Image 1 (cartoon, one colour):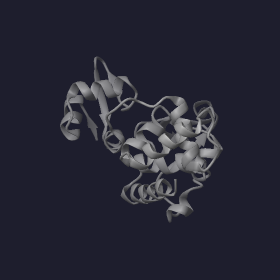
Image 2 (cartoon, one colour):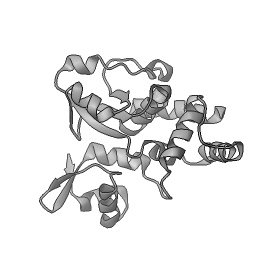
Image 3 (cartoon, helix red, strand yellow):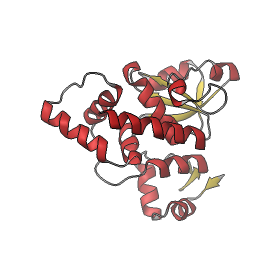
Image 4 (cartoon, helix red, strand yellow):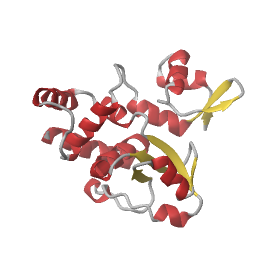
Length: 202
């Protein structure tokens, strides 16, 4: 289902101006039609799952948070900064954490063939207690846009493949975040539980 900015504002409980700002800041994906925007309901659902207030994290903070959650070494932070970030990750709302980590890192795509989609392995699924059949696929890669083009994954605001910019060291956390944002109820819930458990272990 397609929505106008005013309909999207009504559904999310924020102003039309805030919706337009989210679109302009690439927080909410929308298609431009003349002077107006059209928003797919799937994109609006994703936006509502990660919408949050506050200053956006820098790329360095995003990377440090991903490293902490992934259990890999954290670059560029001293012990005090690292401790402060751990505390922030542990205490902030999960939707804000996922929104901060994933900001500017993902797009929805659709494969030219079902074989291509079926060959995308989501490494975190067994840990989430989910099967590889059905649901959303998540493709994590460095230079994700160019890799997606090589695989003929076309941008599609209603697609079933989430393409995420990231490293293999952070892959599982990024996959779980993508399923938290775009997953159906079962995927969203499983990703939420898994991510909460990661936070508890920090």
